[in-house]
Length: 365
Image (cartoon, rainbow, N blue to C red; front, side):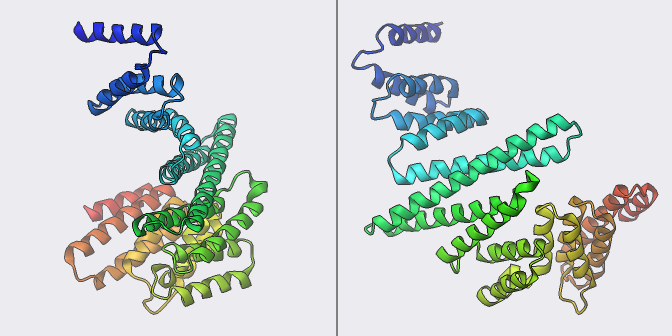
């Protein structure tokens, strides 16, 4: 049809007259039209021309960014990461460069921890090993990018004192996120096992750098919980207690300060220290005096299910049901009881107590 012939003509034009003075602009115009029409494949075709043939074009970096966006629209994550990396290398604008590198870091972090989690569920030794290697490499790549974003924005904030208030606030927020996620990634990286002690040291150092830059930062309470958790895992109880004391002093009204035990337990489990995490949840269950709510015990049960701490999870759900009588909203109370009962049934299945699970579900129905 007409569209096919039109495409053939353009293909011949770019093949035979690639150096024509108007070729780069023509490719850019066609790419823009395709992007506006959400024809991602065609937009990729023409932006790729700009990105690979017309590298001296003033729109070269822009085409790289559009290519990353188009790949994202087509769920081509590898393509998206490739073009984002090229855009980061080409861009001269601090805002665009740091935003793209931050996005790239997030994508690598997500993919890396997903592969590490998949490795834990894989029974084929070679496949699990490959997933771990790939996952650890992605996480370390993310850490490097988070660090680079932080450095780029620190230099800009220090050098450019004439930044408008909105731009400065944007840079401060992005740097805060990057610094925290760099530290968080080191703390969560638990492979290879022989690197865990060094990873924890790097995590503590990075969290302290974050707290130095943002002493009252948005992620300050979480950072202090994680510092305390790392010291707990390393059996350095004095340093752990100091971290939790700083939490109470600097952020007394924070959710983390009010829930330090369950937060510590959850973080220990995330670090792969299942026994230590379950032990903290047991301490929570042994606490008397109404310190914790039914909702907190519900969340504890959910975390214990993920850690396969079946018996302690059952206790947590039982406490959630017992304390639900204090919830005045009938719908909220019913939701807590239903979710806790389902959790108890799941814990029974985990212990292969199928009759007990069946009974709990019957009672719920």
